[in-house]
Length: 372
Image (cartoon, rainbow, N blue to C red; front, side):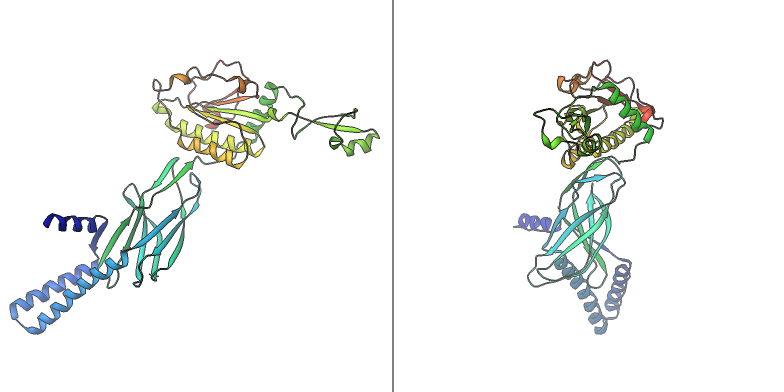
């Protein structure tokens, strides 16, 4: 019986905590003073006053407990967050009680056992009602952001103490590197180097390759009417094969501990490069260690690449995967145009390939725009 009662008490108090406010401490000291006076004098008025003070403490505990009970939380985080870029998170709070309201609620996010004050205050929550709360969310570092739960506090009804309850409400979000604008001369170098190392050919695509005379059997939808009107000859447009606007971006994860900052800069540069090429309509493939994507384009594919960059981790020399040194170049990649390799450490592998390759080292993303 005793062990059963202990289990019930432990279950009730497992996610509860209580601390006195400054007013509560003064109230408690005053109550103790009245208690001493009542015991010393035996005056019934002091006993009556003491009973009133003790009942206020008891009522505070019971009322606060009922305010914190049967609350339901649902959390929504953005699919992707970016370092130092504000985003909006949403928390849905519902009062599951059928006839008792909750008062004076203050909500905290819990991350790694630390309370994060978002400034969320709910003065009153009626029985069965819900409240949608939105707040800004700012991530300071790349990786996986995990919010463990919500801690709700109340000082209702008299403000004598603050009672808190913990509700496990897990939330996960990928924090991607910050996207920054690339220098114009760097982008020009990349595009020129890519054009020099790839052969453009006609095929199915969207970019103009050539304008020539119309031949029997040509698709009439490809007639270039402006040139036809100017030359008085029937002209058709040829398009450049889409696979000439494909790029393979490889991020080397190999770097010593002293290059940790350079590694983060390399990841951020890679993210900016991926975003820039995606906006230009390139089909992209990303390789970062053992993680690799397929070729693709569009917003959903860009988000998938950003998730890879959010989770990649630096590997110290000697700890790299055997498959990464030397890093193989697949036949599909060789036939698909330029391979762009970003290396935070020059001694890292990824050299000596036969594919058209552009190497970007620390002197590029650390400040000096140069492409080799």
